[in-house]
Length: 468
View 1: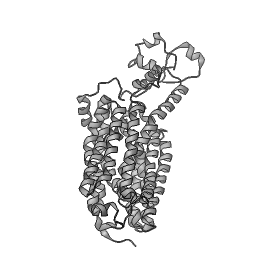
View 2: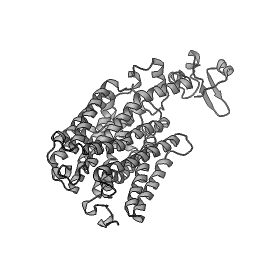
View 3: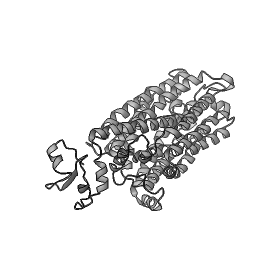
View 4: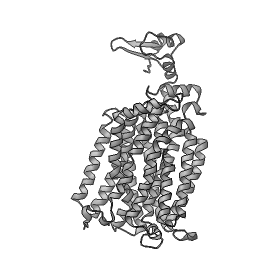
């Protein structure tokens, strides 16, 4: 589709062609009834082409800003809350460490037993992700995402009531079960609104706010550690209770304000609704499709790309999840400062992640490099970064490697997902493929933390050797 400023050409013909290159084009705002009925062009879809020419380039840009405001703002806040609520267990581990009110002391848990909390979170999360994504179109995203947030908020608040390790295990299990589906549901919903080449910049906003969770979590852990004992609750109980209540409140609001699909958006005109759906690629899911199609699932399972992306995701999360889970613990054990203030040393890592995401995301959609180059390059740099831990096994080296490695790791995700959604197809196929990759790719989250055995503490050097 070509915009032209040549008024003479616009007046002469609605549908034109470049005979030298074999291209046919339609000018925006110029499709006439006669041109729309032109069946001489192979593959020409008159209704879709007419809808794609309804808005000018300036109107399209304005429309995308409106969609960003209504959709991506809410999605980003949801992702922020998800990251805060999923990662707070790692901060709780070192809150008020050395005192009777520390969560591990109060619940009578060893370091290796505490590692199970993340495994028990990811197991139901992995199993429930794909089925959840298959329900989101039938039940509508606003209702389904609201259900997800309210139920996981309740499960999170219940963490404050546990009195033993078994109770914590049960609470984490239900948190993973109820939280499953939020992230792949957001990615799937974006496919109904944006083209794949537009997703990196939207995921840029999404992941920047999501990684702000590291800053928020560190500040909350620092604050609630000083609230230890208030009203008979330990610091770790306060953090679970307050974050759970906030999640429940926002989840209720999501039911009323979260947009579903373009045809249901009351803040769009009929012309804008038709334009949004017509501008999407042919393999993109559409709201008018049937809610479930077994054939699309079978075709997705036959696609080798599904298994390759899942393998890449799983291998990546094994290393990333372990480091992310133990990051507050390792920093606290470095001995820079007191335990409460050590939470603040997590902030530079999160801030650096946000900066890296912003810089890389700005170049992702320029088309100058093949999309796979970005995530694969990041992967090489991340491996090299963590490899320096063996060359510089000291406190400064550990912190520097964690800072740079986690920063690039965070930028890897928004580079990867637009590449993935380009290979999905239709409503059921896209829902299943996105849910499947994100769910079984998260198996690393269940395995990663177990690489940090207590015998390797406090610096977790290879073979348990102490770093000087």
